[in-house]
Length: 344
Image (cartoon, rainbow, N blue to C red; front, side, top):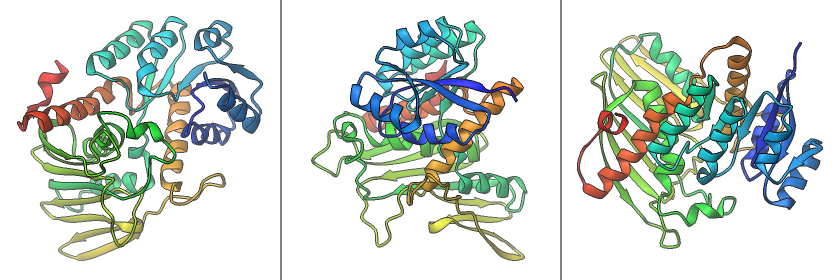
C-alpha cells in the first residue's frame, strides 16, 4: 500500500480535528506542519509527532516531499496559499470560507485548473451522517418530488471562546456558519437561481450579524428557507445540529433534534436513528462535525488515488460562495439577488 504524504498549513483551533482525521487513515501521513505562531506549531508537532515544522509556507513548499497540502488557515491567506500550491504542483484542500471574494475564488479555481491539479474545499457539513441520510432518503423517491424545505441551525452556543476572531469581523454568521447551511440546501435540493436575505445583530459585543433568514429559489422549482442563529436560547441546546424539513409530492421528511429522521408517506411514518459515530478522539457535542471531517478527508484520499473530482471541488464551492455573497447583498439592499449574474 502506497502512503500518501500531506502537509498541514495552519495549526489553530479546528486543525486538531483534521490531524486526527488524517491519523485515522492508514495510507495517509502528515509529514510536515506550518504555522506562524511558534507555540501552536510546537504543540501540534508534539501532539502528533511531526518533526518537520515551518513558520513560513514558502519554505515548506521549497522543501517539498508531500503529495498534497491541507490549508487550515483563516480566509485572508487562502488565495496566496492556493496559488503557492499551484506554482509548486501540489494538490490542495482549502478550508472554508474558500475566499474573501468571488473574484478571489474564481482566480484560485483557475490557477489550479491551469496547473492540472485537484482542489477541494473543506466543506464538511454535507458529509455529516444525518445529512447524508437525508439525501439518501430523498433519493429513494419515498416523498416524491420535493417542493419545499427548511434548513435550520439555531443555538446560543459560545463559539467566541474558542474562536475569538469571529467576534471581530464585519461579517459573521452567514460567512462562518450559514455557508455550511447554504451548502446543505444546495446538496439536498439542487442549485439556486435567486435568493432574498435578512440579517440581525443581536449580541452587542460582536461586530457582525449573528442571525440570518434566507429564502432560496432553487432551479428545480423548490423553495427553501435557510435560518441560522447564534442568538437563540432554546429549552434544548442543539449545537451543532442542523435540522431539516422537506415536503414532497408524496410525503414529508423531518430530521429532528438528536438525529431522529422521520419519513412520512400515505402508508405512515418510518423513524430512523441517524446519529453520528463518536470517534475515539472525538467529544460531544462536536462529534457530528468531527466525524464529517474524517469523512471528507477519506473522500479526498479516494479522489487522489482514483483520479476523480472531489464532490466539494473549488468549482462546486463557487456556487455556495455565491450564495453567501448574494445573502449579504440582499440583506443590504433588501432586494432579491440573481445567482447566475454573480457567477458569470
